[in-house]
Amino acid sequence: MNFEGTYVAMVTPFDKNREIDEEGFRSNINYLIDQGVTGLVGAGTTGESATVSHEDHRRIIDILVDEVDGRVETIAGTGSNATSEALDLTKYAADVDCDAALVITPYYNKPQQHGMVNHYRILAESADIPIIAYNVPSRTGVNMDVETIVELAKIDNIDAVKEASGSVDKVSDIYRALTHEGLEDDFNILSGEDSLTLPIMAVGGTGVISASANVDAKRMVLMVDSILNDDYGRALELHYEMLELIRALFIESNPVPVKTAMNIMGLPSGPLRDPLAPMKEENVEILKKALKDSNLI
Image (cartoon, rainbow, N blue to C red; front, side, top):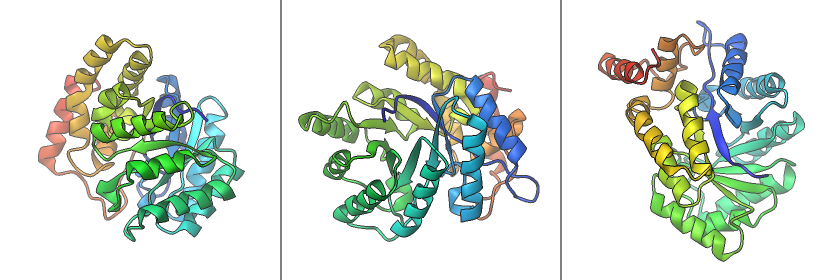
């Protein structure tokens, strides 16, 4: 499967009892589709996957697939630090006709590079669904090597990587290595760092899985489309228009500022699940200013 464009790592809206706000989630899905996004990701890091039960996880995927109803691509977060759990969730996403699964590298137990290849190979061979590997060492404690990512690109059903190591140099090395193996047309690199989307796409990336697009999808879509259409002048303008807002949206742990911003904007979001806590008041003021400067409130 080819992954190209703007994908939104959706928040999971909760009600006052911190249960899934199904009506709000469906409303956000339709709002983002109206903004022109390519696809939507449910039950990922931004969706507070670390604190939702497996039952809730499956329900989020069910709602996503049902409400989207084929209008855009649907991607389910299905990663775990246990291969068996990741496999159960990935098979579930396939069974309910999700278009793809986003699978974070196993966290905390710090598997070796060959262990990660084996983890993803088991998923790819056992679940009939395209897989996007997700590399975010700041959260997991492990960083997939360039060589590891190239090995994954050779496995059927593993079609992309979401790269959030923060290194544009690394993306350059990945793309060069893919080209050397003749894999660059069969394996996509997606930005996992909103503020680096422009440079990542400039060196071979094909899109972004974005948390900030929950708040400002329209501009993110315009920037990514501008890059895909080789209009780098317009893309550069949009990059700088969004930069301070993106920085404010990551001033505390994601998705705390994103959910706070959505509440300020009147979009369904609700509270966070513990141990995530409300933002510090001084950071809320920084966020409000960024939203005002971006004409979002």
